[in-house]
Image (cartoon, rainbow, N blue to C red; front, top):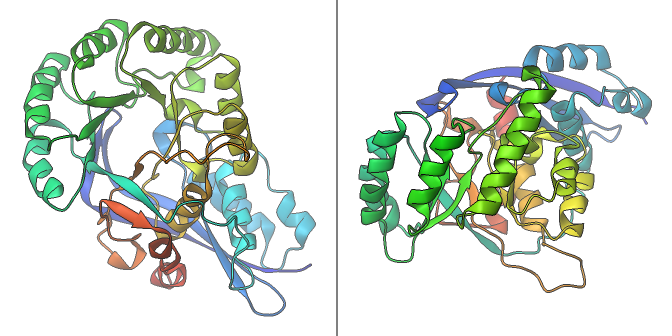
Length: 354
Protein backbone atom coordinates (compact mmCIF):
# COMPACT_ATOMS: atom_id res chain seq x y z
CA UNK A 1 0.00 0.00 0.00
CA UNK A 2 1.58 3.34 -1.02
CA UNK A 3 1.64 6.34 1.28
CA UNK A 4 2.55 9.96 0.99
CA UNK A 5 5.32 10.47 3.53
CA UNK A 6 6.31 13.94 4.73
CA UNK A 7 8.53 15.15 7.53
CA UNK A 8 9.44 18.42 9.19
CA UNK A 9 12.46 18.94 11.38
CA UNK A 10 12.00 21.38 14.24
CA UNK A 11 14.08 23.41 16.67
CA UNK A 12 11.81 24.88 19.35
CA UNK A 13 12.98 27.06 22.25
CA UNK A 14 11.66 26.34 25.73
CA UNK A 15 9.91 29.13 27.63
CA UNK A 16 12.54 28.66 30.33
CA UNK A 17 15.67 26.50 30.09
CA UNK A 18 15.42 23.12 31.84
CA UNK A 19 18.32 22.69 34.27
CA UNK A 20 19.43 19.11 34.91
CA UNK A 21 22.58 17.24 35.89
CA UNK A 22 23.38 17.08 32.16
CA UNK A 23 23.47 20.88 31.93
CA UNK A 24 21.14 23.62 30.72
CA UNK A 25 18.63 22.50 28.08
CA UNK A 26 17.23 25.51 26.21
CA UNK A 27 15.56 24.06 23.12
CA UNK A 28 14.02 20.86 21.76
CA UNK A 29 14.96 19.31 18.45
CA UNK A 30 13.15 16.54 16.66
CA UNK A 31 11.23 15.52 13.56
CA UNK A 32 7.49 15.30 12.95
CA UNK A 33 6.26 12.86 10.31
CA UNK A 34 2.99 12.76 8.41
CA UNK A 35 1.62 9.78 6.49
CA UNK A 36 -1.34 10.02 4.14
CA UNK A 37 -3.09 7.05 2.54
CA UNK A 38 -4.77 6.76 -0.87
CA UNK A 39 -8.06 7.96 0.59
CA UNK A 40 -6.45 11.20 1.78
CA UNK A 41 -6.56 10.27 5.47
CA UNK A 42 -3.54 11.35 7.53
CA UNK A 43 -1.69 10.30 10.68
CA UNK A 44 1.13 12.02 12.57
CA UNK A 45 4.11 10.89 14.63
CA UNK A 46 7.13 12.42 16.36
CA UNK A 47 10.76 11.35 16.60
CA UNK A 48 12.38 13.29 19.45
CA UNK A 49 15.52 11.64 20.86
CA UNK A 50 17.09 13.04 24.02
CA UNK A 51 20.75 13.89 23.36
CA UNK A 52 22.14 13.02 26.80
CA UNK A 53 20.39 9.64 26.82
CA UNK A 54 22.53 8.38 23.94
CA UNK A 55 21.04 6.60 20.94
CA UNK A 56 20.10 8.11 17.60
CA UNK A 57 20.70 11.73 16.59
CA UNK A 58 18.26 14.08 14.91
CA UNK A 59 20.58 14.31 11.89
CA UNK A 60 20.32 10.53 11.48
CA UNK A 61 16.53 10.68 11.70
CA UNK A 62 16.35 13.42 9.07
CA UNK A 63 18.63 11.49 6.73
CA UNK A 64 16.52 8.34 7.13
CA UNK A 65 13.35 10.31 6.39
CA UNK A 66 14.89 11.59 3.15
CA UNK A 67 15.80 8.01 2.24
CA UNK A 68 12.20 6.86 2.77
CA UNK A 69 11.07 9.25 0.04
CA UNK A 70 7.75 10.93 -0.56
CA UNK A 71 5.80 7.92 -1.89
CA UNK A 72 7.00 4.81 -0.03
CA UNK A 73 5.23 1.49 0.27
CA UNK A 74 5.01 -0.71 3.38
CA UNK A 75 8.28 -2.51 2.62
CA UNK A 76 10.21 0.76 2.36
CA UNK A 77 8.75 2.11 5.58
CA UNK A 78 9.41 -1.14 7.43
CA UNK A 79 13.05 -1.04 6.30
CA UNK A 80 13.89 1.92 8.58
CA UNK A 81 16.83 0.65 10.68
CA UNK A 82 15.95 -0.78 14.09
CA UNK A 83 18.66 1.45 15.58
CA UNK A 84 16.40 4.43 14.85
CA UNK A 85 13.83 3.53 17.50
CA UNK A 86 12.41 7.04 17.80
CA UNK A 87 11.73 7.22 14.07
CA UNK A 88 10.23 3.73 13.95
CA UNK A 89 7.91 4.73 16.80
CA UNK A 90 6.94 7.95 14.98
CA UNK A 91 6.12 6.01 11.82
CA UNK A 92 4.08 3.43 13.76
CA UNK A 93 2.15 6.23 15.46
CA UNK A 94 1.42 7.94 12.13
CA UNK A 95 0.27 4.67 10.57
CA UNK A 96 -2.01 3.95 13.52
CA UNK A 97 -3.58 7.37 13.05
CA UNK A 98 -4.62 6.78 9.46
CA UNK A 99 -8.38 6.77 9.19
CA UNK A 100 -9.19 9.67 11.47
CA UNK A 101 -10.29 7.33 14.28
CA UNK A 102 -6.89 5.99 15.39
CA UNK A 103 -6.38 2.30 16.00
CA UNK A 104 -5.40 2.07 19.66
CA UNK A 105 -6.18 0.11 22.79
CA UNK A 106 -9.18 1.33 24.72
CA UNK A 107 -8.32 3.59 27.65
CA UNK A 108 -8.20 1.62 30.90
CA UNK A 109 -8.40 4.78 32.99
CA UNK A 110 -10.72 7.79 32.79
CA UNK A 111 -8.36 10.08 34.71
CA UNK A 112 -4.79 9.83 35.99
CA UNK A 113 -2.93 12.07 38.42
CA UNK A 114 -0.03 14.20 37.19
CA UNK A 115 3.25 15.06 38.92
CA UNK A 116 4.25 18.72 38.84
CA UNK A 117 7.78 19.36 37.59
CA UNK A 118 9.80 21.63 39.89
CA UNK A 119 12.98 23.43 38.83
CA UNK A 120 16.35 22.61 40.33
CA UNK A 121 17.63 24.40 43.43
CA UNK A 122 15.93 26.87 45.73
CA UNK A 123 13.59 28.06 42.96
CA UNK A 124 11.46 24.98 43.67
CA UNK A 125 10.40 26.28 47.09
CA UNK A 126 8.33 29.18 45.77
CA UNK A 127 6.45 27.02 43.25
CA UNK A 128 5.14 24.30 45.54
CA UNK A 129 2.49 26.53 47.15
CA UNK A 130 0.83 27.75 43.94
CA UNK A 131 0.84 24.24 42.48
CA UNK A 132 -0.54 22.75 45.68
CA UNK A 133 -3.37 25.30 45.67
CA UNK A 134 -4.64 24.01 42.32
CA UNK A 135 -4.51 20.42 43.54
CA UNK A 136 -1.10 18.88 42.87
CA UNK A 137 -0.04 16.25 45.40
CA UNK A 138 2.94 14.71 43.59
CA UNK A 139 6.01 16.82 42.81
CA UNK A 140 9.19 16.06 40.88
CA UNK A 141 12.35 17.93 41.85
CA UNK A 142 15.49 18.01 39.70
CA UNK A 143 18.59 17.27 41.80
CA UNK A 144 22.21 16.43 41.03
CA UNK A 145 22.69 19.96 39.73
CA UNK A 146 24.41 21.74 42.66
CA UNK A 147 26.65 20.59 45.50
CA UNK A 148 25.23 17.51 47.25
CA UNK A 149 25.37 19.07 50.73
CA UNK A 150 23.58 22.18 49.48
CA UNK A 151 20.80 20.22 47.82
CA UNK A 152 20.36 17.87 50.77
CA UNK A 153 19.97 20.86 53.08
CA UNK A 154 17.18 22.11 50.79
CA UNK A 155 15.32 18.80 50.99
CA UNK A 156 13.89 19.47 54.44
CA UNK A 157 12.89 22.99 53.41
CA UNK A 158 11.06 21.54 50.42
CA UNK A 159 9.38 18.82 52.47
CA UNK A 160 8.23 21.49 54.95
CA UNK A 161 6.25 23.36 52.28
CA UNK A 162 4.61 20.26 50.78
CA UNK A 163 0.88 19.94 51.44
CA UNK A 164 -0.31 17.17 53.76
CA UNK A 165 -0.11 13.76 52.12
CA UNK A 166 2.01 14.97 49.21
CA UNK A 167 4.84 12.91 47.76
CA UNK A 168 8.14 14.04 46.27
CA UNK A 169 10.06 12.44 43.42
CA UNK A 170 13.77 13.24 43.11
CA UNK A 171 15.37 13.06 39.66
CA UNK A 172 19.18 12.91 39.71
CA UNK A 173 19.63 12.23 35.97
CA UNK A 174 22.53 9.90 36.76
CA UNK A 175 24.63 12.55 38.53
CA UNK A 176 25.83 10.71 41.63
CA UNK A 177 28.64 8.43 42.62
CA UNK A 178 28.13 5.76 45.27
CA UNK A 179 28.77 7.86 48.36
CA UNK A 180 26.65 10.76 47.11
CA UNK A 181 23.75 8.41 46.39
CA UNK A 182 24.10 6.81 49.82
CA UNK A 183 23.97 10.22 51.53
CA UNK A 184 20.73 11.02 49.72
CA UNK A 185 19.16 7.65 50.47
CA UNK A 186 20.07 7.94 54.16
CA UNK A 187 18.40 11.36 54.30
CA UNK A 188 15.31 10.31 52.32
CA UNK A 189 14.47 7.27 54.47
CA UNK A 190 12.03 9.16 56.72
CA UNK A 191 10.91 11.84 54.26
CA UNK A 192 7.85 11.78 51.96
CA UNK A 193 9.94 10.70 48.97
CA UNK A 194 8.08 8.42 46.57
CA UNK A 195 11.25 7.41 44.72
CA UNK A 196 14.63 8.61 43.49
CA UNK A 197 15.04 8.50 39.74
CA UNK A 198 18.31 7.38 38.11
CA UNK A 199 20.88 8.05 40.87
CA UNK A 200 23.73 6.93 38.58
CA UNK A 201 24.12 6.32 34.87
CA UNK A 202 26.80 5.24 32.39
CA UNK A 203 26.33 5.76 28.66
CA UNK A 204 27.07 2.94 26.24
CA UNK A 205 29.94 5.07 24.91
CA UNK A 206 31.68 4.78 28.30
CA UNK A 207 32.24 1.08 27.69
CA UNK A 208 30.99 -2.21 29.05
CA UNK A 209 33.04 -2.08 32.26
CA UNK A 210 31.57 1.28 33.29
CA UNK A 211 28.05 0.10 32.52
CA UNK A 212 28.45 -3.11 34.52
CA UNK A 213 29.83 -1.16 37.46
CA UNK A 214 26.90 1.25 37.34
CA UNK A 215 24.40 -1.59 37.04
CA UNK A 216 25.87 -3.22 40.15
CA UNK A 217 25.73 0.09 42.01
CA UNK A 218 22.07 0.67 41.14
CA UNK A 219 21.05 -2.86 42.09
CA UNK A 220 22.95 -2.62 45.37
CA UNK A 221 21.39 0.72 46.29
CA UNK A 222 17.91 -0.50 45.38
CA UNK A 223 18.26 -3.52 47.65
CA UNK A 224 19.99 -1.78 50.58
CA UNK A 225 17.73 1.22 51.23
CA UNK A 226 13.98 1.58 51.86
CA UNK A 227 13.40 4.48 49.46
CA UNK A 228 12.51 3.01 46.04
CA UNK A 229 14.67 3.76 43.03
CA UNK A 230 13.55 4.23 39.43
CA UNK A 231 15.32 3.76 36.11
CA UNK A 232 14.97 6.34 33.34
CA UNK A 233 18.11 6.88 31.23
CA UNK A 234 18.94 3.19 31.78
CA UNK A 235 15.75 2.04 30.00
CA UNK A 236 15.70 4.45 27.08
CA UNK A 237 15.99 1.95 24.23
CA UNK A 238 14.68 -1.36 22.96
CA UNK A 239 16.12 -4.26 24.93
CA UNK A 240 16.97 -2.23 28.03
CA UNK A 241 13.82 -3.19 29.92
CA UNK A 242 14.29 -6.87 29.20
CA UNK A 243 17.89 -6.66 30.42
CA UNK A 244 16.90 -5.02 33.71
CA UNK A 245 14.06 -7.46 34.29
CA UNK A 246 16.60 -10.22 33.77
CA UNK A 247 18.89 -8.60 36.34
CA UNK A 248 16.04 -8.68 38.86
CA UNK A 249 15.50 -4.92 39.13
CA UNK A 250 13.28 -4.39 42.21
CA UNK A 251 12.37 -0.77 41.53
CA UNK A 252 10.30 1.32 39.15
CA UNK A 253 10.61 1.71 35.37
CA UNK A 254 10.15 5.26 34.03
CA UNK A 255 8.92 4.92 30.47
CA UNK A 256 9.39 7.60 27.82
CA UNK A 257 7.66 5.52 25.18
CA UNK A 258 8.60 7.79 22.28
CA UNK A 259 12.20 6.59 22.62
CA UNK A 260 11.27 2.95 21.94
CA UNK A 261 10.77 1.44 18.50
CA UNK A 262 9.08 -1.65 19.91
CA UNK A 263 6.73 -0.10 22.47
CA UNK A 264 4.24 -2.97 22.42
CA UNK A 265 6.93 -5.57 23.03
CA UNK A 266 8.54 -3.54 25.81
CA UNK A 267 5.25 -2.99 27.63
CA UNK A 268 4.33 -6.65 27.24
CA UNK A 269 7.53 -7.60 29.06
CA UNK A 270 6.79 -5.12 31.84
CA UNK A 271 3.23 -6.40 32.17
CA UNK A 272 4.39 -10.01 32.32
CA UNK A 273 6.84 -9.09 35.08
CA UNK A 274 4.11 -7.07 36.88
CA UNK A 275 6.66 -4.26 37.08
CA UNK A 276 5.75 -0.83 38.49
CA UNK A 277 5.76 1.76 35.70
CA UNK A 278 5.67 5.56 35.57
CA UNK A 279 4.94 7.12 32.19
CA UNK A 280 6.90 10.31 31.65
CA UNK A 281 7.20 13.13 29.16
CA UNK A 282 10.28 13.40 26.96
CA UNK A 283 9.54 17.13 26.60
CA UNK A 284 8.06 16.46 23.18
CA UNK A 285 5.52 18.48 21.19
CA UNK A 286 1.77 17.84 21.13
CA UNK A 287 2.27 15.08 18.53
CA UNK A 288 4.51 12.93 20.69
CA UNK A 289 2.62 13.86 23.85
CA UNK A 290 -0.69 12.54 22.51
CA UNK A 291 0.91 9.27 21.45
CA UNK A 292 2.64 8.80 24.81
CA UNK A 293 -0.45 9.69 26.83
CA UNK A 294 -2.67 7.33 24.84
CA UNK A 295 -0.27 4.53 25.75
CA UNK A 296 -0.32 5.58 29.40
CA UNK A 297 -4.11 5.63 29.55
CA UNK A 298 -4.30 2.19 27.94
CA UNK A 299 -1.77 0.66 30.35
CA UNK A 300 -2.84 -1.73 33.06
CA UNK A 301 -0.17 -3.41 35.18
CA UNK A 302 0.02 -7.18 35.33
CA UNK A 303 -1.86 -9.81 33.41
CA UNK A 304 -5.26 -9.07 31.93
CA UNK A 305 -6.86 -11.40 34.43
CA UNK A 306 -5.51 -9.38 37.37
CA UNK A 307 -7.41 -6.43 38.84
CA UNK A 308 -6.48 -3.08 37.36
CA UNK A 309 -3.82 -1.36 39.46
CA UNK A 310 -4.35 2.40 39.91
CA UNK A 311 -1.60 4.02 37.84
CA UNK A 312 1.11 6.14 39.39
CA UNK A 313 1.00 9.88 38.68
CA UNK A 314 2.11 10.73 35.16
CA UNK A 315 5.37 12.61 34.69
CA UNK A 316 3.64 15.05 32.35
CA UNK A 317 3.30 18.15 34.52
CA UNK A 318 5.65 20.06 32.20
CA UNK A 319 3.42 22.50 30.31
CA UNK A 320 3.52 25.34 29.33
CA UNK A 321 6.86 24.30 27.88
CA UNK A 322 7.48 25.98 24.53
CA UNK A 323 7.62 29.59 23.39
CA UNK A 324 5.28 28.61 20.54
CA UNK A 325 2.02 27.62 22.24
CA UNK A 326 0.72 25.98 19.05
CA UNK A 327 2.90 22.92 19.63
CA UNK A 328 2.03 22.44 23.33
CA UNK A 329 0.44 19.40 24.90
CA UNK A 330 -2.63 19.70 27.16
CA UNK A 331 -2.70 22.24 29.96
CA UNK A 332 -0.82 20.87 32.96
CA UNK A 333 -3.33 20.13 35.71
CA UNK A 334 -3.26 17.78 38.74
CA UNK A 335 -5.24 15.22 36.72
CA UNK A 336 -5.50 14.41 33.04
CA UNK A 337 -8.60 12.81 31.56
CA UNK A 338 -8.74 10.53 28.55
CA UNK A 339 -10.85 13.13 26.74
CA UNK A 340 -8.15 15.77 27.36
CA UNK A 341 -5.71 13.58 25.47
CA UNK A 342 -8.07 13.14 22.53
CA UNK A 343 -8.50 16.91 22.25
CA UNK A 344 -4.80 17.45 21.54
CA UNK A 345 -4.60 18.99 18.07
CA UNK A 346 -1.65 17.32 16.37
CA UNK A 347 -2.49 18.80 12.96
CA UNK A 348 -2.12 22.29 14.44
CA UNK A 349 1.35 21.38 15.69
CA UNK A 350 2.27 20.11 12.23
CA UNK A 351 0.97 23.25 10.57
CA UNK A 352 2.84 25.43 13.05
CA UNK A 353 6.11 24.11 11.62
CA UNK A 354 5.26 24.94 8.00
